[in-house]
Each structure stands twice: as C-alpha cells, then as structure tokens.
Length: 209
Image 1 (cartoon, helix red, strand yellow):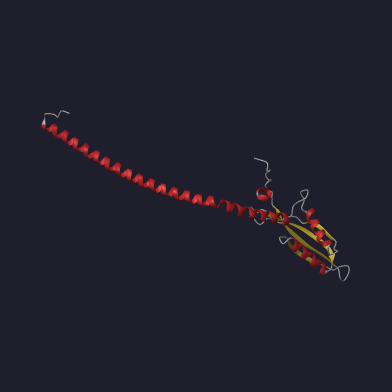
Image 2 (cartoon, one colour):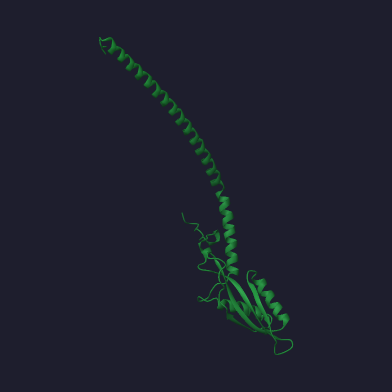
C-alpha cells in the first residue's frame, strides 16, 4: 500500500492502522475467553451426563429386584381381593351376600332372612372401594348369634357387622334379632385386572422359538 505524501494524511493512516490492530487484539482476547468458558461449560455438562448415566445404569441393574417385589405384592393384593371383596352375581350383590350368610348360619342351625340395604356414601370422590350393606333378620339364641357373628368375621376380616338389635322372642331361649353386614365392593371396575403377575401370564410352549 502506498502511503500518502501529505504528512497529516500519513499520520491519520497510521492511527487507523493502530486502532485496527488494537481492535483485532481485543476481539481475539474475547474469543479466547469465550472458548475457555465454552470448554468449561462442556466439561461440566459432560460430568453431569456421566453422573446421570451411572445413576441410570444402577437403577436398571436393580429393576429385576423391583419387578419381583412388585409382582409379589400384586399377587398378594389380588389374592386378598379374590377372597374378601364381594363380587356381584347378575349385577347384584344381594345374591352372593345371601349365599355367604345362609351357609354360615346353617352350621349353627339358624334360619335367616337377608335383605338388600344398599351402599353407604363413599368416603371420598376417588374411593376405589365402597361398602355394600345387607340386613340380616333371624330368630336364635344368644350363643347362636355370637357363634354366627364370630364365623362371619373370621371368614372375612374385612367385613363389618353393625346395628345389632335383639328383641323379645317366641320362647325364653329364642329372640328375634337383626344386624347389618357390610362388605367391601368395587366402586366401579376392578382396577386389579390391569395388574399382570407371573401366575396370570400364559405359559410359553417349550417348542416355541
């Protein structure tokens, strides 16, 4: 580049060149700082990712244990539900309730009359289980009543017996009595049907590939 002959113009050119050199040096310094910050941030993210991967690997390694524990718990819950939650027959709970009470009463020579008493209101809006209540009328002695109530509660520890009423009877040893029995029943559909445990799964054919 040919410099101007005029001294003043040459001085301005030198000043301009100096400003450019200083500016380029500053920009280079900023770029180096940013590169260093970027490397540090990348290092931090890499360490965080490695920590996450280690945590996920540890959780994956424990999954079989958690799955086994879940299946055992699901199996126990389903077994309890099958035994103690009252299931409707032909969309009615009074039929199975009557069968259970009549079978228990027959062991002690008691004849009973079982009537539908409906469902009390749920304890909460999201309640999965409700109560189904049947009223039992009978004529029996005190000992027979005690034996019947004990059997019902022993056969199903989740039912509840309330409102025991004893009145005069036709004989000194017999009295007209009544009481309510409340079983747990599902509010809607049985949510446990969605649970799959090992016993529910179809066995694989040994010849299947």
